[in-house]
Every structure is written in structure tokens, then in C-alpha cells.
Length: 259
Image 1: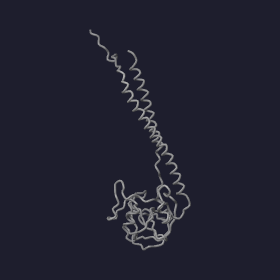
Image 2: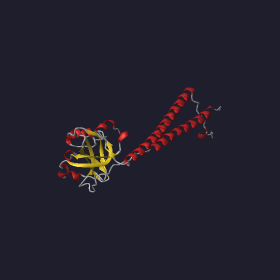
Image 3: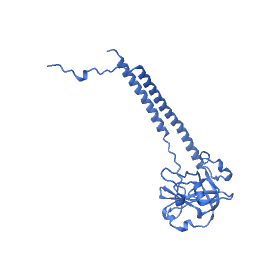
């Protein structure tokens, strides 16, 4: 009987790769490793920035309330230097020019009630008096109140863009999905409007039933902070590149050993 050669005993060695191929693969490995390390380091810097931002916002939100910035300060306000300040303001509420912006909260789907507060210096600040359910909107008395003196304490929030990810505001149809302050001002003929609005706290809008009155104090101060996880992921991938290179070099040395 003819001898049958076992498949497992066959010579499975391969020819060594050329120097040009090794150089290209080496450069590619270095580039990938450097890129992954750079991404990991960037996430470390982002982590430090996010932690500083959270600490800053927490300090602002829990500081004693100060007067809301007047017209002379509006031009200098940015998200970095103003967002989430604890402020107070007084003036005249223009209830007949308020705007309802669609919202979803723990109380259900409904609206933010954005009411203009006319200040003594002639400017106007939009106040988010709180959240209401659709039943509140159906009561005409809630949107036809005469102007009245008012005071609000809450958190300063910079305006939102007119265009959202899925929907855009439609002033002609009175459909609002974001708190676009210039757009609301133009639609309501408000004149000079601050580049920020005030989220009223629970003391300023003490409503309990969102079907009957605005419920304030619902501002969510929550900043996702996953940068540490991202950094670990990028560095782990960089480590995997090193492991892959070690295995490749070992196999390449084995291929170059004399038969």
C-alpha cells in the first residue's frame, strides 16, 4: 500500500516578506498607534475640561441670585461666561405675547411657556415660566391675560438655534420646537430681546398641576461625561496594535529561519 502523507506534516512555512513590504507595514503600524494614542490623550484633555465645566456650572447654579445682565452687558454674554448663572429680574409680564415651545419632561409631553418680561431699561427678557400640558393651552384665559408686574428668579440660559436635528421652527404656523430667541422676538414684535432666557425656579413658578399652571424648577443640569471610558478604549486599541506587531515580528522571524 502506498504511503499516505499526513496533511498535518506538510510544510506550511511561507516565504519571508520583502523589505519594502515590512517598511510599509511598519509605517502603517506606527501611524495607527500614534493616531490611537493621540485620540486617547485628546479624551484625557476633554475629561479635564468636562470636570472643570461641571464644577463651574454647579458653582454658578448654587450661588446667591444676582441681577440678570442688563442691555449694556448683552453683547459680552457667551455660554462659557454666562450659562447657568443664578439670576433674578423684575418687570412687566406680557402674557399676550408669550410663546409655547414643545417639550417633553418627566411630567409628560407639552410645552415650555416662554413669557416676555419687559424690563425697566426698555429691554425684554424671555422667561421660561415652566412646563404645561396641552390641556393648559386649550384654556383661552391662560393666553389672554393682561400685562402684569412680575419677578422671577432662576437660571440664565443662552438661546437655542432655530433649526433642530429633525424639526425646524415654523413661526407662520406658530409651531416652536426650540427656544430661538431672535425668532420668537421677531414673531411677537418684541424689539430688543436679551440673548438669554431665564428658567424660572420652583419658587417663581410654584405650579403643581401642569394642566392648570406652569410648573417651574425643571431645569436639567446634566452633562454626559464618558471621556474616561473613551480614553481607556483608545489606549486599549493602541496596546492591541503593539501586541499585533509583536506577534507579526515573531512569525516573521520564524519564517526567516533556515529550513
